[in-house]
Image (cartoon, rainbow over all chains, first blue to last red; front, top):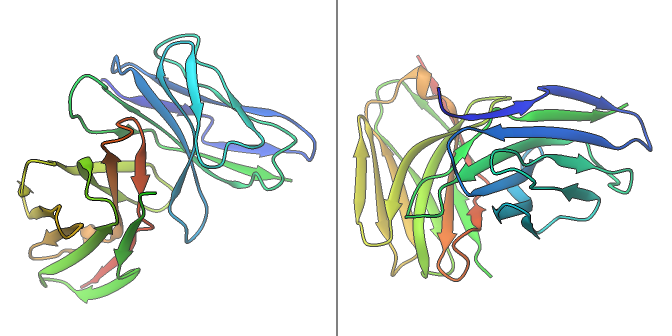
Length: 113
Length: 113
């Protein structure tokens, strides 16, 4: 089955730690995205990538980093510089060739303990 | 800067009612508009995609319309069911940056028996 897989589903982080969220897709999509969702708020764009080895900052990139070494993978690292990392993180992908819809993974809930 | 608004923020209706969810955007230069459904603690599921050249799209009991000139889209749900209870989000893909999906804050729908 084609789709987007995010792991882990739940993640706990201690203060001062870096953690990495995984996002893998087998849809052969060029564009991939990371969003953050907080209660009562819409999705806010963290980073996005249009092609391998290239990515751009979204609206709230501070305290986050990404890499895009393979087309199917777009991991997100939440660094210790992110002051309020507790949130629900969503990964998405889209085929840039054409006017196509975006697909989302099932999300990772990150909690700082 | 493109801004997307969804009204109402929450809606509670009895089973069987036909209902309309609203999505407004400030910049009419969009590539497409997509409606999603999100169940609690889950990722987003794509419902309908409307291209900028289209006026409406239908899938089962769902019908989405698009009026670019007025910056509005509506999602019509016919004969609502308790299983329709979820948060509904709209997102626009803007023409000046076709790789950036901008989301509204969503409408939380509850359909009671």
